[in-house]
Structure formats: C-alpha cells, structure tokens
Image (cartoon, rainbow, N blue to C red; front, side, top):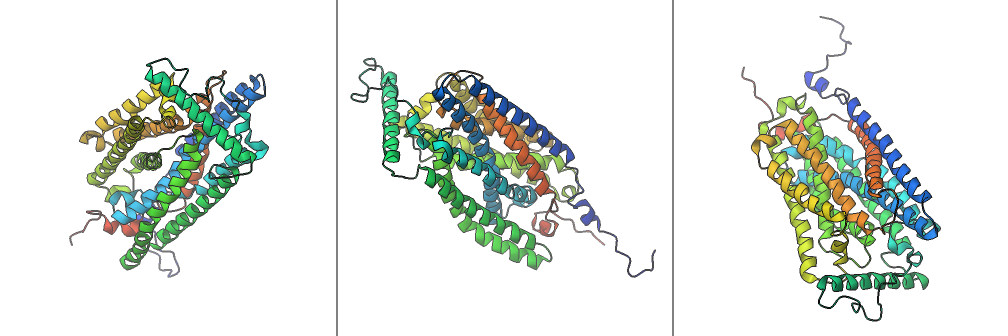
Length: 467
C-alpha cells in the first residue's frame, strides 16, 4: 500500500460502472451513420428523379411540394422525441415513477436534441417563405399556383353526383369545400390579410414555440444536475422539478396544440379535428417511450442497472407501453367516429383520401399492426419480462409510429407520376433519424447513465448488507 498522502484514492465501483464512457455506444452511432447516409441518398435520388421527369411548371411545383412534404414527414416524426421526452420527464417527476428514474438520462439526452429540430424547422420555414412558397408542402402558402378543379360545380355542389349515391355526393361536397377554402385563402393573400395560416404567422409561431420548449428543457436539465449529493439535496431539487412539471404540462398541451394545428393539420384544406392534437401528443409519448425502452433493454443487464433492476420495473415500462398503445387506439378511433357521425363535407375528405388506392391498405395495416398485434403481444407477462422480446415489440412500434405520421401527411399531397413518392418519406425519416441519432448519443455520453444518488427512492432499489 502506498504511504503517499497525495496519491489519488481509487475510484469506487459505483463511479467506475456509472462512468459516462463505460458503455460502448459505437455500434449505435454506426447504425445512425448508416441510416443518415442511406436516408439522404434515397430521399435525394427519388426527389431528383421526380423533379427531372416533370414536364411543365405545374408538375415541377407538385414534385417540389411533394419533396418538401416528405421533409415535413421526417421533421414531424423526429420532433416527437425531444418534445415527447420533455413531457415524459415532467410526468415522471410528478408521478415519482421507477421508469422515470431509470429512463431519466435517455429522456434528458433526447430533450437536448431540440437545437437540431430548430435548425430543421428553419429549413421548412425557408421553403414556406421564399419564392412565394412555390415548393412549400402547405397549400395555403401559395394557393394561386394550384389550378381550380374543373370537376367541381361551384354554383351547385353535388349536382353532378349520381342520384341516390351518398358516397359520390359526399365526395362532391368534399371537393367543393376544398375549392371554397382555397378560394378564401387566395383572396386573403391577395388583399393582404394574414391569419393563423400565413407565412408571418408560421415563422412567428415557430420561433415562439421553440423558445418556450428550449427554456423548459434548459430548466429541466439544469435542476436535474442539481439532484446530486445527499438525500436532502436530491429531494430539494426533485421538489423544484415536481413543482415546475405541473404547470409545465399545461404549457406543453397549449404549445403542442398550436404546433399540431399549424404544422400538420393545415396540410388538409378546410379540415379540422379537435382530437388530432391529442393524437399528436399520444404519438409522441409512444414514440419516445418505445425508443428509450428499446435502448434501455440493450444495457439493462450491465452495470450500474444490474444492481438496482427488478422485474417489476421492466413490467411497469412494458405496461406503460401498452397503455400508450391503447390510448393511441382510443384517440384515433374517436376522431374517426366523430367525423363519421358528423358527416360534414369539410371533414370527410381526410378519410376519403386515406380509404382509396394504396392508402386503404395502410389504413387497414395501422388498425391491425399499430393496435391489434402489439396489444395482444403486450398482454403476455412472458413477453413483458423478456428483454429481447420486449425490445422487438418496442422497435416494431417505432416503425408503426413512423408509418402513422406518413399517413397523416403524405395523402394530402396531389398525386403525380414517377417514382413512388412514399420512398421520399422513408428516406427523409431515415436521414433525419440518422443525424438525430448521432446528436442523441453525443448528448447521452455527457452524463452518468443512471442517477445513482436517487436510487434510494426506488422500491427495493438497494440492498442492506448484514454485518
């Protein structure tokens, strides 16, 4: 033994196993890099081919708008992670849950990727603002370039429908409401009247939302760093975070409603849904929980989790994943039911577009694979307690959430010939996801993977040794 009083004391086992660099994240970053390169290549290749094959200005406009629509799909899907993580962090602080503690670091790292999403939003805002929104994915940015539908009878809507055919009548009225909304927005732009769906509002609302989210995320991460030390210091910081999280969830609900309405719902002319912001939020919860749970299950058998992990904790996480799956099903079905019962011409085109052609199979697939299959799998305790099986279910739900976001946005675009445009959606999701993953793992390595000073709060999260 060294007698030198200046010699450094050996690191404790807890400090060694909880070192941010102790876990090897290189395989994950390689996957993210491959996804980024492959996604960019696919997204750009399909976009260039479709733009090159356009024969006139109108087709070039449609190809450019569809290119940015795919960009919007990727942006919307990956926006779910920082915002959803922020909300789950606040829920965890309020409910004082085991999953909130065990998933704390991945959730915090996800929130700190918000600057990347702000940069991506700047690209979307540029497409909306420049060149009169000629390549914008939103119909309201430049409605004058959209030619009127010659099949719409504006003087007597529904007159051309086959007698007694309610479906044809509904379609005719839907086209009429879309054309009417387009005319109204075109007139508003011509006379200089700007409302919520306008370029200045789009940029202004986006700046306000990202500022609010950024301040909330900074507060959550700052006080999380202070939840270290003695139990008294930990509990004082957690009390601050709990007091912040209650009002924070209210702010989250308000800001999310504005984002869902302007960034996603407005792609459909004349369409409105009181349920969609809730669906938007639930999709974020499910996406974030699925990703963080899948990542957690890759490292749960290693230190420092091995000493504190109990089967009940994994069971709780799997049950929460099931709850979010059921909540998504409930809200999605409620939206469909309300629109079906209301049978309003301005609302039914949303489902008419998604119940024809190839989109009908996507709609049926969402019902079977986004609800029925994971619901049945997550009922079994053996799957919930088996890390590999549960991880497979979580990764599967990640893919289904991506398809769901594509289903929201892609059918709103005007179809045109060329390479299947959904390949651009897949490419954009992969490309943005790869870049996001690189940023995420960079942030994840900055802090210890487990808040060891809070593990005394876990039920049976520590051992008492007998002497």
